[in-house]
Length: 434
Ligand code: HEM
Image (cartoon, rainbow, N blue to C red):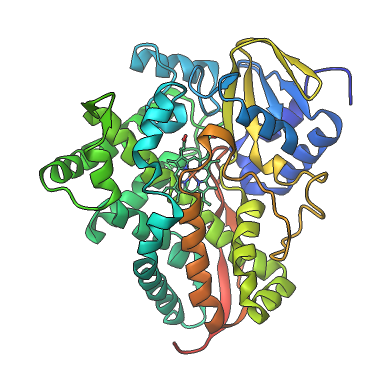
């Protein structure tokens, strides 16, 4: 390992710039370099507070597991510039967060809010959704079959399928889904010129300029307005959906307040959507790029859960979360000081060559597949079982009917350093009738 702690500037830029996530190869080249030469190095970029880039699988797990030592909410939970942080704190009266959701919380609040919905997300509870999800999956597979052998898998299938599922559990009627789709894309794709509200390239490294933050705030306000009506409806007439659990939740014996209930809807609506659609599209992308993977899964449907996990690893739709140290400590041979800010690079951990053989290859039969795309520790993804169930069901419905599959044009990825994945995936295919 090199003795200097500082990461070369071009490498640090490749890690934070939204464009590298669209280009993919330069990102993985930079991450490979980091794992080999500077696995826990410090990035010093103009206009940005210094931060450590954590690139090895083992170090990401070690940090994520110690939630008291490495907190999520003391500093910005996702990457921002000094100016971006200043603007957000100005708007919120000192908080580094525009939203207060589970991902920005720490002990003791985090556990109190997480426990509200934890049981709802357990496999034994969500299993009862299986028939309804299968029906939604079939509608999507039928739609794909009706498109005449060519489609953009992202826009024609992958975007609307998890959206429909998540909206159903949040009680959003189908007529409002296009609005929700637009809002999640605007929230997560804020740096992508095709996806943000102004349809313009964001300034700086992403979402931190004044205009971009005002835009994000407007998107959040729209979400809040929308979900306020759902909270009111579920309080008046409780059902068995997740929206009811949130709207009627109690924290320390008092009803959850509107702001926090709405933040909860926003995290579920957003965290559960783009991540799952990116991974679903990634599975199809992987099978186009690796025809032998397609042949294997077609021949042996018991590989479908493996296909799902491998797609989630290969895409790793959540690109980073930040943590900050509450005390002086040491990780991976590096001294970390109290107050230091750390970037957990999930795509890097998921391509760590000491954990995964041929990490850049798409292998549905990879076993074991110890990816960390869902994070680890107290914040481990609440929706992981739902995401995997949705994907499994879609491929159980799609693969028996899919006779051939290939790219039909250049596939592209979205420009974002927080959540990103396939943006267009033109494919050509033959399908048998239902
Ligand atoms: C392939 C799909 C998904 C991926 C890759 C993913 C990834 C992640 C990651 C990395 C975290 C950790 C955050 C942290 O450590 O700070 C997380 C948390 C979370 N995810 Fe997911 N997620 C996915 C699907 C879903 C779905 C379907 C839902 C809900 C319907 C969901 C809801 C949440 C929630 C509520 C949290 C916050 C948990 C907490 O902070 O305690 N996710 N997810």
